[in-house]
Length: 202
Image (cartoon, rainbow, N blue to C red; front, side, top):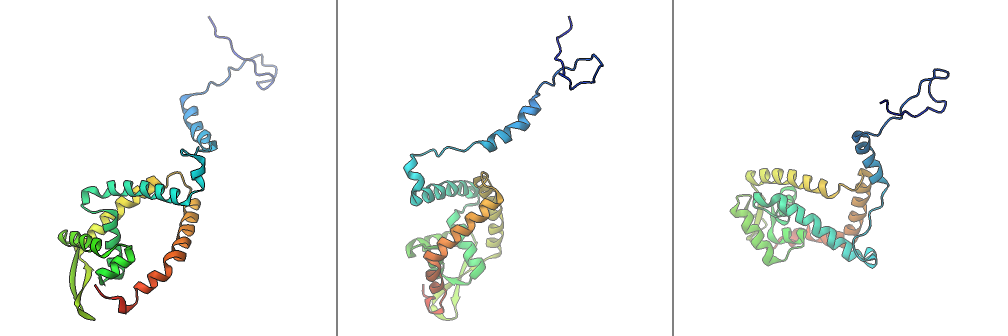
């Protein structure tokens, strides 16, 4: 038995008397359409609406989320995001004293000692004499530390990409600009103060 077919309603070949069956949607069509449907949706804020105006809540939760993703990506390298930050500071600005590194990273003296001790045991940093003050040690990154920095950086880039997946490139650029503006406003003067030579005490 022949399956019924739909008339074209004038859109087929005129006068041919031939009926054209309507094109059925395939799985491929539905898959191709899904991103367009998702793009049109507005994600619902998954917390009480009043918290959407709380900068403290939004920053804390966003920070907690990316920190967890970053920590998991670095776990088998034996370092944390905080230790990665220390390596970055020493690599870019070192040699530096422990106090200078702690000031840059906003880490108290007791914690910075433990963090540097851990990096020293990994062979990533070394303590050396400070030519300006023999009572103070300066921290330098080692070749092993630079290799660790490269490996960790690749993993953190991947973690960051996963975290920022919902944002477009322009949205991420604007977010960076806004965050940098906030940090310069609140920490810019303190950062410059920590770079003064007479702060090299640790």
